[in-house]
Image: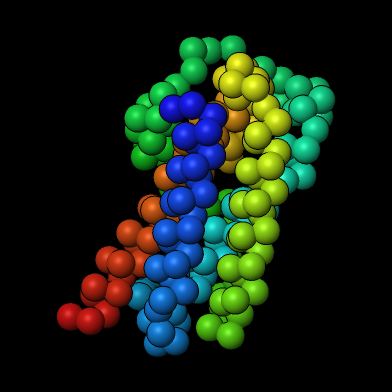
Length: 174
């Protein structure tokens, strides 16, 4: 996947999940299946997971100094998802949403997601292809990932959560 294809997938998949959640009524947005996040919490989680990127991507020098380069063969999209599926899939504390996310907060969260997506797009545009495959960022479950690998995962991530909501709401309406 080229850089432009990766950026397009990241944006499109976030927009798809956000539009899906935005279309939910208040009852669907707030429905809590036992031991699962509500759609509102899923939405907030999406914001929490992308919020760090504008700060870190702003400085290639910081990334190189703090996280370095990759010392293994880079993973393709399929390998990233296979390795991710072998983890606990449990969000670290800093990415766990509040217990109560209400429908009146939806627009504010969506606005935050869109602002972050716009910033991330602008910043990724400044990286040449080769830096996406050499510079690394830490992932809490997978360890060091190249920037490209991280955004393979971050492109998949909103669709994963949309699918969880669809399954949860499918149970709600049975």
